[in-house]
Structure formats: structure tokens, C-alpha cells
Length: 493
Image 1 (cartoon, rainbow, N blue to C red):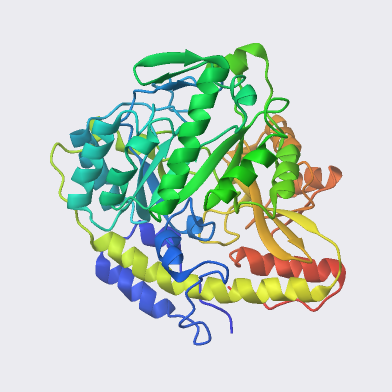
Image 2: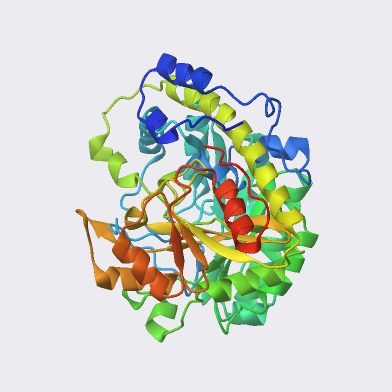
């Protein structure tokens, strides 16, 4: 039976708890799916409770839940050749960049304002713009203030790991369940090419010695977090010719020490950013190089493929940033937290997720049963909710899925420039979008015009808008069926 559509976009702009709850009840949940939690078979129930609403630690959750970073920790103890922490760069989307630094009190005010307006919010993270563990007093003060006002929000930090072992006990005491450590090497000779210096124990170290100390501290911190039951995500920046092959060894080391996820990210090295790698011409990997390395890492530490390399002041769903809507000068001097919208949103999403889980399971089962031995790479235009619900011309990124004998899996995303502005499309922009779709077989979208559809076809990419508002996995299974001659599923929407 087709699952009713619950428009999550509409829900986020609804202000009344009663209206939200009425929508949830009217949408209901298909009787066959009640009781489904969405928990993958290979994840322990206690771990699932920690990650199910965390958009970074759960690929499924990133369709529904938002994160917020507060820029309270500007001091840093490690210099990275790919980093330049400059401010007032609202159009940049890369780690370490913020538009305004905050005190812990300002951060609390901003978190409350966002929680009142963004019902998807489930996670508060501190990711700099320096290092959250090195600038510890501000990090701790911020978490303490927020936890008192919004006790259900998940607390999360991102760190280079150098000062991490000094604060693991406090993180555990504050019920911080999620820590991200950036680990780019396990061999100091590789690390010396990435880190010009570190500041540790009141001294500055350089070269091999600096990389050795950093490596030892990162491994110690990871082991201490694992022993305390705190989930860890390892971020690694893929730098072609420097550590790309070496990341296979990194994956082995972090898996052995209990890392929950390994997130391999592409180097961002635009010369305009002023980083050492940018100035020296070090290139970043292309999308297919990234996918090839990630595929080689399968079987090691579990991979995260939905990362968006967020700014240190990002707000919203992954793939969007609403931070400029919540600058300090736009927030009232005094704000009071109202939990009703967040509570209502969570109620609605619980219904939607049950239907989505059932539809996904059925779709994956059908693709596996096809026995075709072939694969498809499908790029999807989506605004969230796990559905094909974005116009091709409005998309600023496309999510990429692979359908193969193993089923349907999310493999990454491709950032693109919005093709259609003011009802018109620019050919030069479309050329850039087509270039970004290297290796893609089919584009799924809610709608596409004849002109871009034709130009995509000339480039060997089919664009299909026949599955608008279907669940992504159901649409892909139907495509797979049509492509390889098996019986398709009915649409879920």
C-alpha cells in the first residue's frame, strides 16, 4: 500500500504543536511498518539510540535532522597545510571558517534562537574555528550552559586530538557521546608533509618530531574514548600524492582502536583560500578518485560518505547552511527556549521514518534479488526527507547512490552550481553541472526542463523526473528493474 506523503518542508515552517501533531496523525504509518525502528541489523541497540538522530553519525538520520556548530573555540595548537582560519567568509563552505566568534553566553543565546526556529535541530557541535579541546574552558562552559537549557540536545566536538587525552574524563562526565578526531596519518614521515608545527606542553615542535607526538596523542585519545564507550568518528583529508594510499593504513589503525566511523574527505585547495597547499598548487581529488579510495576501504572501519565538510558555524541540515539567518545582531537580546516545535517534529519524523525504512528494505531486497550482476550510479536531486523532491535546476548538490547486486547504497554527493535562477538557465553553469556528474548514469529529480534534459542526454546522462516525491530507494529500485528487465516495485508516494 502506498505510504502517504508527509511534507517535512511544510512541517518545519509550522509553528503550532497541535498542527504538527495533527499532520502526524493524519499521515499515520502503514500498518505493516509499525514497530520498525530503522535500526540496521549490524548495530547494537544501545549504539543505535545514540546515533539515530545524529545526522553525522547516521546516514539515515541526515535526511531528517540538523546540526549546529557554535564558533567558541578559536585557539589552535596544530598548524595544518590545508587550513587557513579566516573570518567573514559567509560564502565559503569549509571547516575552520566562521563569520563571527562567540562567547559561551552568546552561543547559548544563539542555540536557543536556532532551536526555536529549526525544529530539525538535534546536535550541537563545537568544531573550532580552532580546536575544541585546546580552547577547553570555552568549550566546557558552552556545553554546560546549553545542557541546562536544552537537556535533550546531543553534544559533539571535533578535535585534532593533540589535547584530547587531557579531557576525556570531563567529556564523559558531561555525557558527550560523540567525538570527531581528524587523523590524516599514522606514520610521522607522512605527517611531516601535512603539519608544519604543533604546540604541545608549552613548546613548539616541528617536522617528524611534531608528527610523532601528534600521532601518539591521537591514538591515546581514541583508545581512551573507546574504553569509555564514547563513539568516535575519524575525519581524514585525502591529499593526492601525500596520504591517499596511506589512508588505507590509517583505516586499519583506527578500526583496531574502536573507531565507529571513518570519514575520508577531499582536500579543499583553492589558492584563493590562502592555505599552504593552495599556494603551492597541491590539488584535491576528483569525485571518482574519492569513490575509488572509499571502495578500497570497504571491509575496514565503517565509512561515512555523507559528510559536507561544514563550516565551524554551520546551521541546518547537512548540505544546507542557514547560519547567516542567525547572526548575533538578528537575535533578540533575551530568548526563552520553547521545546514544542522540536518535540512535534520528532513525533512526525517517527511516522515518516517507519514508512521509509519499510520502503527501503523492500527496494533493496528487489535489487539484490534481480541477480543482474550490474550496477548503476544515480544522482538524486533532493531537499531532504529521503525523497526525490528537488527540481534539477534548483539543486545545489546531488546525492549519489549506487544500485548493485549488494543492494542500494549512498556513496557520496556532488556539489553543483544552481543552474536555474529567476526562471532561466545558463549554459555555462549547465556545463559545470555536467562536468560534476562524471561517472553518473542517471539523474533523478522532481522536474527538469527539455533543454537541460537534452544536454545531459548528449553527455550520456539520462535525466528522469517520473519519480517525483517517491522515496529515493524505491525510485532507484524501479529504475534498476526497468534497466535490467526485472519486475519493478509500485511507487511508495
